[in-house]
Amino acid sequence: MGTKQQITERIGVLLRDSKLSVTDTRIKILELFMKSNGALEHSDFEKLAGKSFDRVTVYRTLQTFLDKGIIHKIPTTDTSVRYAVCKSECSEHHHHDHHIHFKCETCGTTICLDDTDVPPIQLPKGYAAHNVEVVVSGVCKSCK
Amino acid sequence: MGTKQQITERIGVLLRDSKLSVTDTRIKILELFMKSNGALEHSDFEKLAGKSFDRVTVYRTLQTFLDKGIIHKIPTTDTSVRYAVCKSECSEHHHHDHHIHFKCETCGTTICLDDTDVPPIQLPKGYAAHNVEVVVSGVCKSCK
DNA sequence: AATTAATTTGCAACATTGTTGCAAATTAAT
DNA sequence: ATTAATTTGCAACAATGTTGCAAATTAATT
Image 1 (cartoon, rainbow over the protein chains, first blue to last red):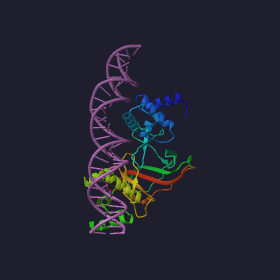
Image 2: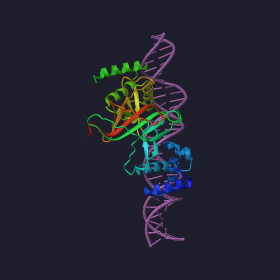
Image 3: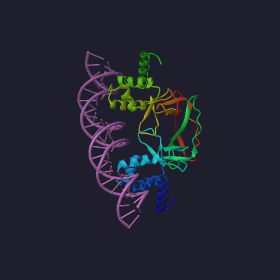
Image 4: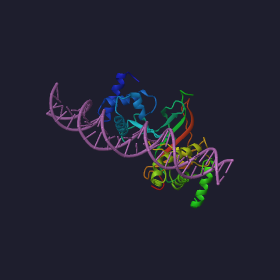
């Protein structure tokens, strides 16, 4: 992962590449993503960072990162929205998240299984697929 | 689908089988599910049924139906929760929703593709799968 | 390096969504 | 028909998400 110094540097590059100002909030939020081994939801930022930034700023920052293809959403069956950082192939307006997501029922974390491809799906006649989301739930490596 | 009379009869049987009282609210909500060709979210009930029942009652009714295996949730990437009626194989505490879900980007409806199986997923070593959720988005038959 | 322009942030106020306790009403059981 | 059990609606609250706008920060310009 590199030193804290190096991470901050990498985040700076990432933000500038996305034509975004480099601000404390954005650095901090990306740091949280990189430290975490799983997906984060909105409430996690308040828990992890305390009151270091405003709720509204978090909403706006996450939306900005989504727009720029820096993070992506993971579907859930509850009202929370989970976010994870995209890999390099993602770009503005075009996400290439051809991986599946895994939610551990024991520890609760959701992770991207980057090396597990989404299988081809044979849809009924007349349907055109643009995107396939797969979320597997079960027990993860660390919890078994 | 049958006449309105027949539908009400079927709903009564369904509720009694689930050991639930047969009430106006429950009948009405199940009617809405059966009339609708897609999944419904909470706000739909207020739109479709107006003020005919209380918001709290809807929350509680949907929760009850979930508990009894009458309906199931469909994952989304937003804060809404979508529900659809289960097929007969579903029972209390055990859902067998081995079908995929399709969300049309044009008309916005989400449907169950009951005849499209969830493909097998090869997880990395150490992971155990209990449930696989697949949501495909694209253009549906009616919108193409 | 200082000034200006553009962007981002935080606050306040509000809108929406989900939850809980409890009394009244409805349904089921006797 | 009466009693018991369940369900509903209301009120009040908690949590979550949104918008406008002024102040602060960052980036661009001279």
